[in-house]
Length: 301
Ligand SMILES: C[S@@+](CC[C@H](N)C(=O)[O-])C[C@H]1O[C@@H](n2cnc3c(N)ncnc32)[C@H](O)[C@@H]1O
Image 1 (tube, rainbow, N blue to C red):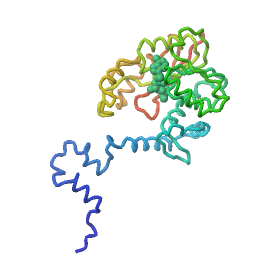
Image 2: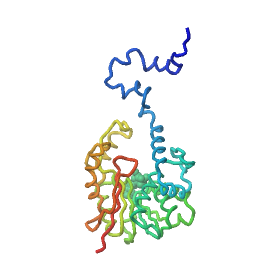
Image 3: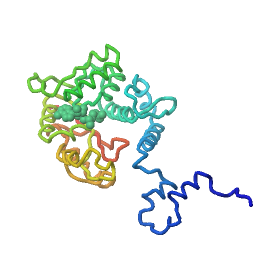
Image 4: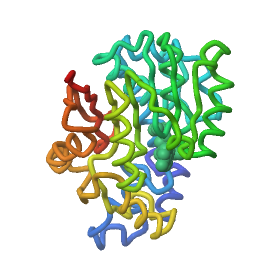
């Protein structure tokens, strides 16, 4: 008897473990369990890196020539061992894909040549890195918490040359109160006001109103409760804390495009630094469904 159509050893094993004789008895959840994860989908609970790489690759292969140019002008992007794919010969990670979109969005509205910039909550400094690598700005102030500043200072020291690094001023939040207000052409806030107390956000927006001519913001349009996404690995208390922060605390289904769209007017209002400020551009911040970005400009009085 010729067995040429028989299952491979791989599929013998699958049938022993996951495709047993009772495979079709109950169809209720079969597309969200190991049966379907052996057929048409990888288990999202254990394949996070696979999905992240797929997303980076998909986004990377759709970049515009301008997006690529900004990325190629930004050196040393692999410091810190990010999850990376290769597209068109270039290593790409999600952070710098986001950075090129952020800087591209800003460039369409604001001339960064010679600009004085302030960024509030810069993380390790990826957006600063890309702006400094692409534009001859006059000054860049990073305002952040002490330990995050330690990281951004160390990171930017390594990835930028001396001339660019020396234009960056690192300011701890505690130092802000006593400072004589300086003027900036642009303030940036990316995915961080949403994690601050509402009073803190109000104080920063007032500072921006007083000292800046333009404001770029990228933050979630609201809050969400969806344990299926991360199993609340940081604990229930972390979820409660996340829900109490930021200017926008409305709950929505962040993967429902109509719900996101309905929340956008609240976002535009919630991040407006003052009555004299006009939102000149806004849109979804790719690739995320629920992060929105906007540029506001202060009207001349
Ligand atoms: C989620 S990270 C985002 C970092 C970066 N913008 C990015 O998108 O990769 C939040 C940032 O906000 C900063 N942050 C939190 N509370 C702050 C506060 N009260 N004032 C200034 N920065 C704050 C954190 O230290 C961190 O840099």
